[in-house]
Length: 108
Length: 108
DNA sequence: CTATATTTGCTAAAAATAGGTCAAGTTAAC
DNA sequence: GTTAACTTGACCTATTTTTAGCAAATATAG
Image (spheres, rainbow over the protein chains, first blue to last red):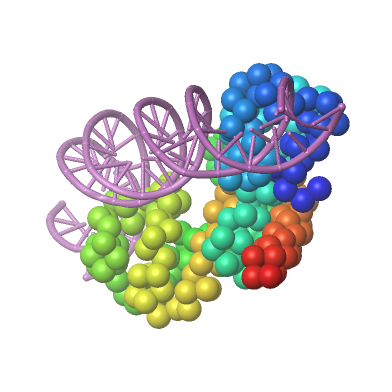
């Protein structure tokens, strides 16, 4: 599965829902759904939980799909180089480690 | 170099600039600089070009550092799983490929 | 055809971004 | 122990971007 919009469309169709069915369930009108599926609009972060409930798909999975798509589009849009994601991965490790150390200091 | 703020601070100090020197050159006041260096505020995307001119560092390098940092922080904040960046990388490839095909259709 | 589903132009409203000010601190160097 | 450099909190504002509803235009299935 490549984009979040394609994922949404596939899951919707698997359930034989029209865009307006889906829109009603998730709280968006039909044009928003269309644009989201065609990626001219983003699905809103704040509805991810509702989406995971609706589709009965683990929230972590949904969230990861969502952010992978978001990052990919942004990296493409700004012509980032190909190494960017491995750098980002290292950065996350660094941040995690830093927070751990901070935690230790706070409770000393 | 791990975060964009740390990068900025290191480059500023290498030049023996105070935060207020740097702020003047880039068009931000001293509290903004401090917060940016300590990552409680973001550096603005629209100033990346000016920054690359000021530091005489290739814009692509600056941009990559900036976005790697941005993605990492977001992934951390939303507790994305560790595989997310390799998925994102694949997604970029997919997007690039799709745009190529679209280009071919448009000029047929 | 016709009905249903989807896409899209326009737009007001909402939300995110970007940053400032002022005050009250803390560091670090001399 | 001053002084310059830096940090941080609280609060405020302007600008830009994005959203999502309406309605009109297309597309698609039967």
